[in-house]
Each structure stands twice: as structure tokens, then as C-alpha cells.
Length: 527
Image 1: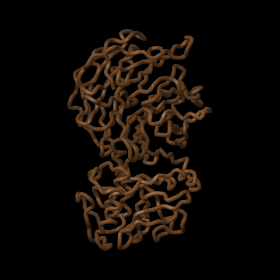
Image 2 (image 1 turned 135 degrees about the vertical axis):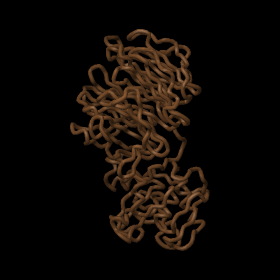
Image 3 (image 1 turned 90 degrees about the vertical axis):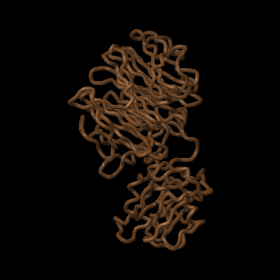
Image 4 (image 1 turned 180 degrees about the vertical axis):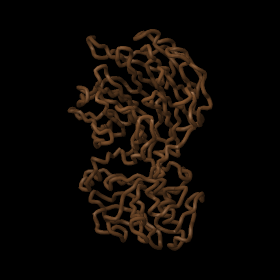
């Protein structure tokens, strides 16, 4: 995640490009579908396809297919970029930005594009596809169909003009569905969650490959019951929250179906699965309105959707609807999601995928939604959100380089820039880590991060304050992390690996701040 506030000026390029990599063109292939997620290498391969297989003269009134033949695109600059991105439409230079988010030029990667909008320059719009940086001095390669033939060219980012038009008339963009190359994350959303019942006992759910498993503390702050297999969708990603009356409600989604389970009474047993709650998707999250109504958000390849409890009829849910704002933005496709409640009671939703980080929020408590903040950040691996004692939100996000954070001010609409959570020892947290955040009894936010090699922990040294050094020996590697608070506010961390689910808890007044790790039941699911 190249975080935008760190890349505000072009002189940063020399530092960034010293280790720049090039995505070499490969044989065109049809790994993507029309309008679906697409890797950077496939975008470049598709662009090279029209260089190697010239579609014909420049003519906006003529169209040709890209590789695979499942779309046709105009013989002009924006048609060419649309073909390379494998869009399901063929927008002009004014429409292309609607499929993308604006980025800093210093953040350009293979498959991004620069656009001079016909909406600003009528009859004189232009766009071209960025290929790669050639060196550390601002020289780069690009693809263009500004005239016959389609060409692969070279220029410098600091030149007075780019591809025949003034440099300062272009804006850099990143397609919302573009993905960095490399192995996809093996886990999208969290497959393990925990929350406290109204009486303070923690309940925990973990998603095995076949179904969902459940355990609970048999008494407040006490031992755990044996794990029980309770059905539900296998391999699902989970979200949990207390309803307005104190009952816990669980939501589970996999590629095929979304299902819903809830306590039938406060501190009571659990319902049957509501198997028709929704279709399949990528990830799921739940937030609670100030009135107590729950609102569920879910992502799929088309963006983010939501569904909410009726204010008039308890137990009744609305249908699903896309969270499409007036600009046509529906949020990032196949994104990892967090929903949380701000200090004034509004739900805020954070959505990240490999290419982009976006943010949307209720404009009033129990109210409608803002436009998506499409430039909230760059792509990354996972996110967590904590709420300061003052009500301010703090967002943490992981990428291959470690952990970053961003926070809002006393004005909830104003956010800081991103900064890396690097401590005095030079530690920035584990790369590509699963994240969880919770409040200690005194209101300080504590963050827990786990990847395949290590579990680490960092915390605010005072409420609304700065951060400690990373506790780099908090635990070994694993696959997921969750955190809950018992009746006294003591934090209990759950970590999973293929051998089961483990716990570690704070020990207030003890000789050490945390217990060791111990298995939560002998028959828990491996994740």
C-alpha cells in the first residue's frame, strides 16, 4: 500500500524507483472476465496484443475485439485503455475516471493510466496506459493509440508535454478492479470472531472447511465449553455484533451463500441458520446504528452491498442493495470490510482490496450514506479499526511492508495522512498480517497482528496517545486473529492455525501482562 500522503511530490520518485520492477509483456490470456478483477500483468499483456495484432487505423467509429473476443472497443485512445483493462463498457476520456480512483503520479504502477478528460478539454481529450518506470530519473514506458498505429513509447514524467498534450492536463488513475500480481491472499475475511454476551461471557465462532464451530465461556471469565459443530456455510468469513436488545447475531458468507444466526434470547441459545439471507460473496461486516438496528455490508466482484434491520418491524430485514453513490461508485470489488460506529453513533465502513482502500459513512445517525471516499488509501492486505476514548477512529492497515495507521481528528470528516507504525527499534509490524483491534479497560487501543511467521502486539501508551514499541515475541505464526473483552474489560486474544484455536489473555495485577498461549478446547477446527 503506497500511502498517498507519503508520495505527494515527484522528487520522491528517485527514492521509489531505485528498486522499481518491470512487469514484462507476456502472451495475452483470458484470466479475467469482462469488468472483473484483472492483474497488472494481464493488462499489459492485453495492451501488447493490439501492438502485435494492429486493429486497423485510428477511427473512433470502428471497433475491434481484444484477446479472447469477449468485448469490442473503439479504435481510439480511450477504447484502447478500456480494452487493456477488459472493461465491460467502452467509455471516453471523460467516462474512464468513473472506473478508477485518482492516484499520485509517484504511485504509478503497470496498468495504471493518465487521462486528459474531454469533459475539461472538449474535443481534445486523451489517455494512455502506463507500462513501467525505465529508471530512477522519471523516464517511463507507456502504450498509446493517439494515432495510427498503436504504439509502445517512452517519455519522461517531467517533460512539458506527454504524448502530445500539456503535462499538467493529465491526472493519474488506477482501475478499481486491478490487482497486483503474485499469490492471492488465502483468506479474504476473518474466519474467526468473538464477542461478549450481555452477561459478559465470551462466545467464539470459527469457520472450518465443512461448517462453522462454536464455543463459549461456561461462566463469566471462566473456562470454555467444548467446540460444537453447528452447520452453516463451510469456509465462510464471519462477522458478529450485539443487537439493540443485547442478543448476539452472527453473519457468515462464502462464495455460494450468506447465512444468519442469532441468539433467540438475551444470553440464550441460538436460532436455526437463516439459509436464505443472501447470495455468495467475498467478505462481510456488520455495524450497529445508534438506534440498535444492525446494518450488514458484504462485498463481491461488483462492489459493496448492504442490508439492514427494519426500524418498524423487529426481526425483519430489508433486501440487499448496492452501495452505489451518485457518482456511480459502488465501492471496491472483492474487498475486505470493517464496519464500526463513530463517536456520534454513525456507522462507518472501510473497504480494502489489493488495489485501493475506500471509505463510506452515514451522513447522520441511522441515516443515508455519503459518497465513497475513493482516495482513502492504496491497496493492502487487511484492516482493523479502533475507537479512541474521545470517540475518534483509528484505522490500521497491513501490506507487505508492515502496518500503517490513519486517524480522524475532532472533526470526524477530517483524516490524517497515512504513516507507518514504525517503532524506535525500526519494527513496523508483520507484513501481510491479519489484524484485530480492541480497547483496553482504560480506553487505550490495542492492535494485534498475525501472519504465517509471527504474532505481534502494539498498544497506545495513553488513551488517545502515541504507540508503544511492537511486542515482536507475542506469539508464533498463524492464520487469523480475533480479540474480545470479558466482563471486566480484560482482553482475550484468539489466534488460529491448522492445529486449532488458541487463546492468550491479559493478566491484570499478575507478574506478567499477558498469559501464555493455550488451546481453546481439544476439538476446535483447524483454520
